[in-house]
Length: 364
Ligand SMILES: NC(=O)c1ccc[n+]([C@@H]2O[C@H](COP(=O)([O-])OP(=O)(O)OC[C@H]3O[C@@H](n4cnc5c(N)ncnc54)[C@H](O)[C@@H]3O)[C@@H](O)[C@H]2O)c1
Image (cartoon, rainbow, N blue to C red):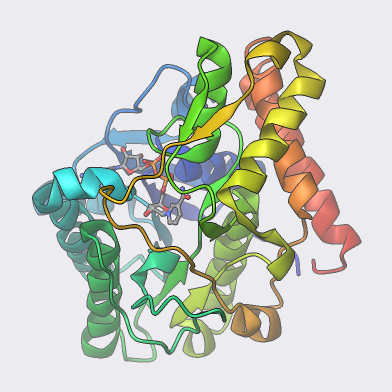
């Protein structure tokens, strides 16, 4: 499978964020004509800022809670393909601001779907939700795309609700042969260079090393499906391409999780990262460490959550290609180099390396 986006008009929401910036860089490499719609980047060392990708695309600042602003950017850009990633993506802040989280993640998704409906140029759209959209039964086996939506905390529920909205729009408005093909994509925790979000493990490890403070870990035993950011992004790209080629077969929900070897407890990821940084940055050696601060009073977080990716493997011919060790090493490589090397080139080097891995696995 060759990814063919050359000269395609692609609009990404959330392109100033972690996943959106990597997706922008990958699509730039594939020759797409890109536009982006998002809020300001969060920090001066986000991939979006350091890579300078904003200067190479049509870069719009807009709030997806504002339907008028969204419609106007769609009308201006006339995209053929839409990747919707803009969101309030964190569980803990969703407890502090449920109203903002639902407004952005659920109503914001309504606005993106409405813009797709009213913009005839759109042929395909991939709307990104999360593995947390499922009603979590703390099963030991993976959730399949047909399992019920749910969500204990406001973030998860806002994404479960976004999935219901996507399904309703698909059935109500996108069911004709010439309708845009709209799919949703559910992935788990992703890691990779340039994520600086609060309450996420990799940025927390990097901040702990930089500040010489031990890292406080809330749920060291919690098992999560860890993935490098390029793995689900490759899935989103494949899915968008298939939506263009055979819309009737792909306009539905898709899981993009890791293989079982990447299901690891938080503590394993933490220790592997500290070890990588110890090898790459010997100066950091003396202040690498973490402590368990789990408490019975902390807000509820699901202990176990896995995705079944059989559907993507068999029907989309997508599969993760990195081992757990490669995922950790690629991530640590970025953080070890971003201060001293041009980040645009660093990201493109990592994307090229990842594409090569994909080819070796004969999946392209
Ligand atoms: N990072 C993960 O581990 C992970 C896991 C599962 C799902 N996801 C999903 O992937 C998507 C991207 O996540 P991320 O980690 O890159 O998040 P991020 O916080 O790094 O980026 C979020 C992006 O959304 C934009 N945004 C937020 N609120 C907005 C608003 N009201 N209007 C316009 N733009 C707004 C931000 O400006 C930013 O560009 C999200 O939908 C998230 O729920 C992420």
